[in-house]
Length: 530
Image 1: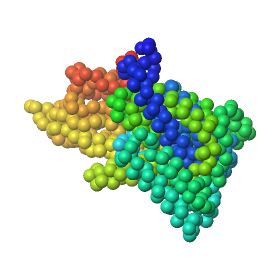
Image 2 (image 1 turned 135 degrees about the vertical axis):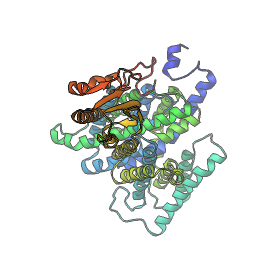
Image 3 (image 1 turned 120 degrees about the vertical axis):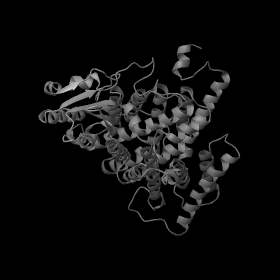
Image 4 (image 1 turned 180 degrees about the vertical axis):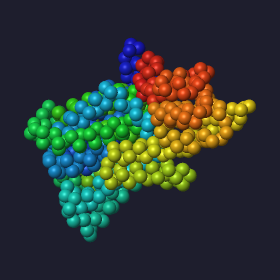
């Protein structure tokens, strides 16, 4: 087996028959577990279950082949489904397909522009708020299934025996998913739970139980090329553009967070930009083949990794097995009770919510705890993309405020010279603290500012130095700048350089607000991935 093929599939060593078998069985396990979730997410988005299954197959296959993290699983997800609801209800499924195409284009642009590297800017409290908010949103989306007409949010709630039967079947599904793994992990617990509840309803004489077939008919077949039937006009763009932007952002955020999680488990690095390109290509294609789009799936990726799948073989196998299920088992899917799917989704909610955050939030800094809660609330109130952006901005502002307060100086005299040995970062937020350090009426005509333990991070810092130099010059005093880096000295304007004495003693150079353009090892992109 060629080394290029081994490198392509993500293997670290030559593949053995045993390893290939493990990868294929892992893919089969993932495919079996994908079916109920894809159907459930499609129902959440108020589209035919087959639309979710097609998305799971196409997105899963393309990202498995071209994604930045071998072993990661992608498909239809709840994070995207909950955003799609209002679009489908208000404009129809054809607008959804057009939106998914545009979503893919935006994600391709993100990959080309290497925007995936910015995932490193997401702090841990934001990540916790992200998953907690996602869990709550998925939970709330399931509540419609407890109504007389699940596809109508304004429908009346179930009552009497109908509600009791629904609750009982949901509870039974969850119990099976909790208990079964304690005895065997040979088969996916979600599949066993759905099968058991379905058989109980079909052969147990339980009546008036809503099934997938009551919501929509699943006609198994190969996905066919289909240009979205929407008017090609500016008004259409104004409708789908906001949804496409939100979906592309959510999809990339969830995919890149999953990539980092799998990276940590496998102790390997994955390419963020490559993953953005794969996600974009998969959504662009699935929009033309009747799929609802998708992104990386945290739960399914964990199933794959824990089952031994770590190469592209497992992801490809999962997609192929899923297509086989679609072609030959669609009739069985229609008989699945909605209660079983709700039970599966409730377990996804329980597994997604970061329960340890309820404990750690008490030991966090107040600012971090506030960010965690803020991101969770905004996720439920608005959407995941806005929540993460808000969380990052608030975290950045908190960091800037804390850094601004750390500006200080050790002040001492040598002969007749007053020396200020700065400590901290000089940037826009710390200028006020910087200015408060100096007193022009301290009786010293010779003043030294030593930057050996300080750094100038932006042009506002340069402006502050120039303004201080002008004040000392007007006062008739001499100002010396020591250990100021060469790039900062060069940025000082001509008049400032004439008013101060800049020592040529300097630290190793550091850049002011400059992007790093260093060398990365072969195969490693700017996001730290291969």
